[in-house]
Length: 157
Image (cartoon, rainbow, N blue to C red; front, side, top):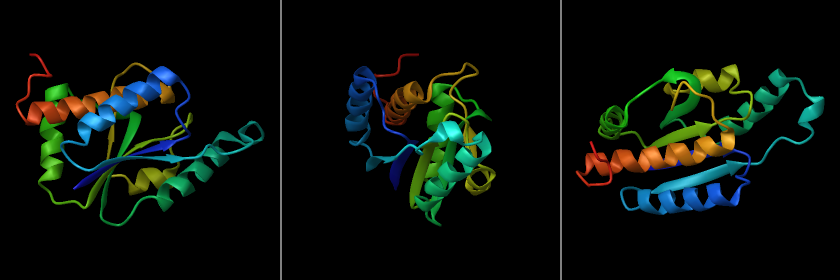
């Protein structure tokens, strides 16, 4: 299985980029992992939020293939503990999907078309984080899940 983190817009802050790169390298020792960035939509100040979500959704859907297990990082999604996320992730891995694609949408969320293609929505917290910061938080938790599954000491209980 291959894992993809699909993002709308590039990461801007240097400290976030460094953290994302650090955990991306760590995750890659467990399975093929790739970050794909969809460029921001231009001139969004002149667009209604529904139009912006639709345009972003079209770009997201172009990156998703028929065999993918699509996970939307969404504030209304299912919440897990770190150990619960690891257990859930393992159940997805044994289900023999070609790829697992985690998607961080734009500032206004996802279009209805993207929601309809998703397999599950996951929330990392009831708190709200910037779309820039959630990238680092997610990838650290993704790495943590792999260390839990492999009985490694990174996660202390």
